[in-house]
Image 1 (tube, helix red, strand yellow):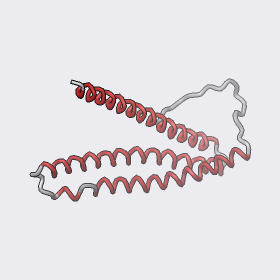
Image 2 (cartoon, rainbow, N blue to C red; image 1 turned 60 degrees about the vertical axis):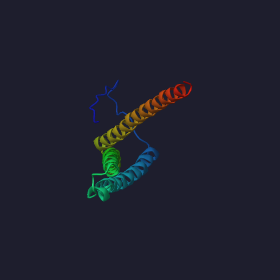
Image 3 (cartoon, rainbow, N blue to C red; image 1 turned 90 degrees about the vertical axis):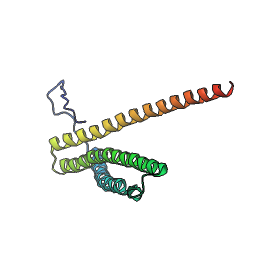
Image 4 (tube, one colour; image 1 turned 90 degrees about the horizontal axis):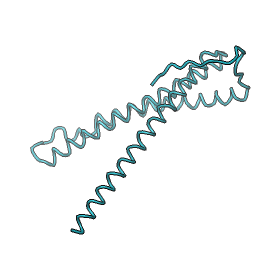
Length: 160
């Protein structure tokens, strides 16, 4: 998800100077991002533990019956979904954590490079959030389209 972007400046002046108030806002945002990143790491671990133990009840079951086979397949699918969600959750948390850590350090030591790196992590967080949102919206649109086709097909079968 990381991209290296180059920006050209029209002038070689000092650039943007943050007011004390703006620095305070960034410092507070950094504290919350740092906190949410750590909480996100904890929930990522809990999701992975949930995926590990989910369906373990069926792992020793007699798979000769079709119901047991269906339960095993469904629990495997749910495990996969939990792991997939945990991976996404980890990266969201990682970008937030990095932003929080770097913005606090950058503002504390008045380090422009650290503040720049912090805002890059924030950009990566929002870019990933935007792409995820687009994918979810496309999935919703696809599901609506599928349900409409199924509904129209079922309605036309009822009239015959």
